[in-house]
Image 1 (tube, helix red, strand yellow):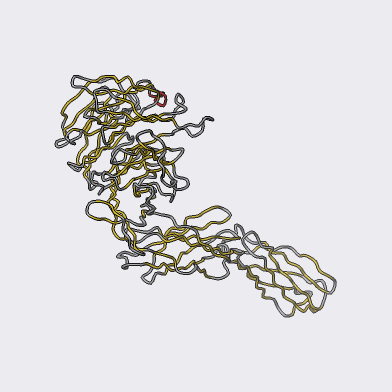
Image 2 (cartoon, rainbow, N blue to C red):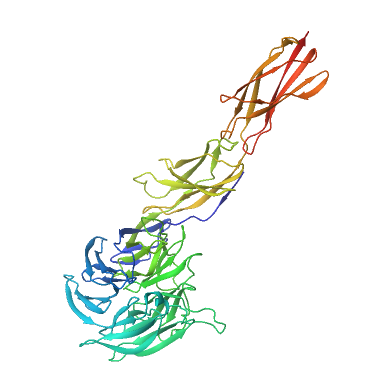
Amino acid sequence: MNTAHRPGRLAATVLAAALAGTGLTVAVAPAAHAAASDVVAKLPITTYSAMAVDSVHQRVYVADSNTSNYNNPGNVAVYDFDGERVTTITTAYYVSGLALSADSGTLYVGGRTQILAYDTSTHQPSGTTNVSVDICGRSLAQSGGRLHFTTPYGTTDSCATVPTNLDTLTDTGYARTGWNDFGVLQLEAGAGDRMLMGQPLNARAANPFLTVFDASGTTLVRNAARRFAAADGTGALNLKDMAFSADGGKVAVADASYGTRLLNTDDLSDAATGYAALPAGASASAVAFSGDGTYIARGAAASGATPDLLVQPADPADASAPLEFAFEGSLDGDRVAPRGLEWSADGSRLFAVTTNAYGNQYWLHVIQPPAVQYDTRFAGELTHSPSGAVAGEPLAVRGRLELDGPAPTEPLKVTATRQDADGTHDLGTATVKSDGTFTVLDEPDLVGDATYTVSFLGDLTHRPATDLTHTVTVGKAPTSIALTAPAEASLSGGVHITGTFTAQGRALPERAVLKVERSDRLGTGTLSSVTVAADGTFTIDDLPRTRRETTYTVSWPGDDLHQPSSAAATVYVTR
């Protein structure tokens, strides 16, 4: 038997942050950390294109991207800041892309052949502008007092490499800017009348670009631009999302191949200090700076307990540990969707759109700055009983969880798994008693080492504990044979022996067949085997071949899960 520790898994964890006023600030408090309040709403969409946050009216708009068929209807789901659905804006044809006017009075929605405007107080239409047909989904950005939008046009099966134009809404309609390239180009507005345009990686753009426009004049002026591939072609941008810092001086890019890039806006060079790498196994999918410039949210696609969302200081030199979320399953989604992060203007709420692994279900998370959270730990090592574990027999693994802070109002639960030669097996949960003790019940079904891992994933009051492991050597289950034989028998009357065969652990796949040997003064020989009855009994009848002591030995060879056993009885044979 041996034991070992490994790092714990995270559910919704922050290591050093607390609410102060309406913003998120660093808290310095030994042994007390912060938890986030996470309200989740299931979105009524099966595709997703954009999210816009109206902090004036406290509304969140989420648009689908139902572009798979020319006649698909469009939907924009509208929620308040508490995650309650207010209404749904529906259109005759699909929509994609959202943008708010500078005063948040108008919501712009990218339609198939129109740019649609809605009053954000009433959610009623307030204007429509006919534009060129969009086949693959638009991106919208309000910058420099005007709405800019992309127009990809091709066929639905060529959207990855579709030619895309950058257009601008005018007083009389729209105008082509002359900027265009391949792929569904993405736009993002920033402070100082700046606007980003980024190109997704595609077969017609092996080295995609990122560029910054000055949108302050009547004509878009391109400033800094950058392609990221090295001379050998490696390192190309794999764009999923991009965002300006609150002051516009920095650009963060969610690069699925690289992670989170932090760039200087003036020339798009790498910032002197970048962000730490995302957790191993996480692929960048979204990025957003809080409106007050204090924090950055970094979204990812990750599996299992690997964090899908990190919220941390926007200053990369600040080493404060991030708030981490691992989204798992039908209540949360499995990952942050591309372009799925937005903040309220005051930084008091982060809105995250998550999706499942198939990309056909979506959730809206409303994450508020955390309250105080306390440390937890497993005390000592795990133990097990009985000490001699056998395959097919119940086994109890016991431990104790220690909690800082106030006692929980509801019993906590730990989760457990068993890893053996057949892989990893989920053992469900075990309730933690008021004294911190818990018992995980199992019935191992393989001979050899079984490693038990116990985890506490935390809650809004308690941080996760570091996982604890415990390895148990599982042996074969014992068997036994009991014989009842006469002390004396005769050559003419024969020997009659009864017996019982018992096997612990898992039931035998079929009735045991026992070997019978007879030893007398003439030697040792094998008699006919006997098959054990369903109740474990058996009978041996023999006509001895000579007088004096005769020993009958009954044995079973064992199998993969059971030990062998044998028993012997000696009978004195008379004439």
